[in-house]
Figure 1: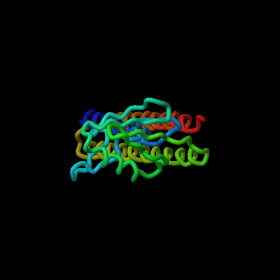
Figure 2: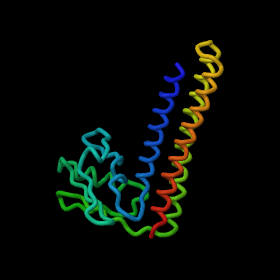
Figure 3: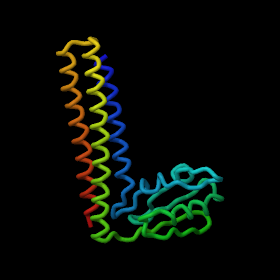
Figure 4: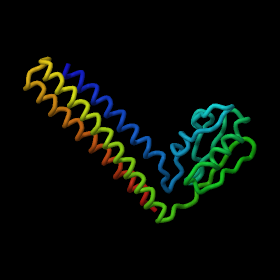
Length: 186
């Protein structure tokens, strides 16, 4: 029972860590990153669809994103979604087959805004992991209360859960540090 609780908590913490890293990828750095555009929602025949499912997104140059739609009739809808994207700071250019987005150089003020945004995303990730720990602790306490395991076993489980939590929070902090250095790199 205790191993199931710990395994479930660890699995959820891994997913939370990955979600946080995905959120970091959506924050623009000085270089073009296809991850910025993967989750942009496009109105494709009345259905909101992620851009990553509608076309190939590549970076032919350091600050250029090239979007090659699988269905050329979606070109207009993709372009419209890109223009509506906040904080892009660039106009998409279409030649009828592909869309090019030339990203401008980031100003120092903009970089600092992005660092602040990234820190906020990291804090959300840490809170998520702490919530998973809290739920795991509650489950361990109910096992102890129901007599499903002895006090020593539950205590070992709690220590293991704390160690897992600490490890995952440290991994979020490490990813944050890497993203900040990437953002502040000129």
